[in-house]
Image (cartoon, one colour):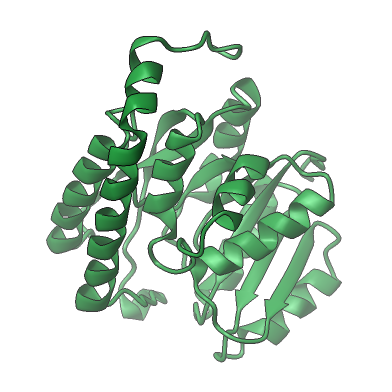
Length: 258
């Protein structure tokens, strides 16, 4: 039985993930309590079964959005409710089985050691990783590090990470972006701009085949256009913030949580 945390929870946004979501939730629950799933307008029949699981498990909660609003919007919905319940940090992970639930405890422990930071997973790829996806994320990582003056973002796209809730909600509520596939990279850049420093931990990632239950909603052209527009926006924001970022880089405040 996992120990109940009053500060840190696991948050799983879920949109038409297929049956793999049930394994993901069980594995997360074996490592942590509580686990929340935000169903983002799913139409694949998984919602009712997730609700049945939650009815039999006090450590599992399912929040349901009536229509698909995007990953970032689903995460924000969960974060706002978590803040109302007094939680301070959320570990976000995907519902499709790609992320390593076994490392939840390690990431949460690091977050407790450095509560003012965000704990970012840095993917360790195996042979299942599509070469195009691996190469493409290197481009996004380069831009994210430029936009933050190399504050230390190990990976801008990997969604297995622990966020401090209050600053992330503040950043997201302050503008209308970060609601879809652009959520993960824009979140780390904007949090860096607001003074939240990254801590990086390695974590394996699995790309599951269809016969293994893998479901992907990634669209190469649509999502890369979205990322291109996102980095264009962020570069304008970077230039506006450049004096402040330079000041922080060369005259950093002492870290109260080394």
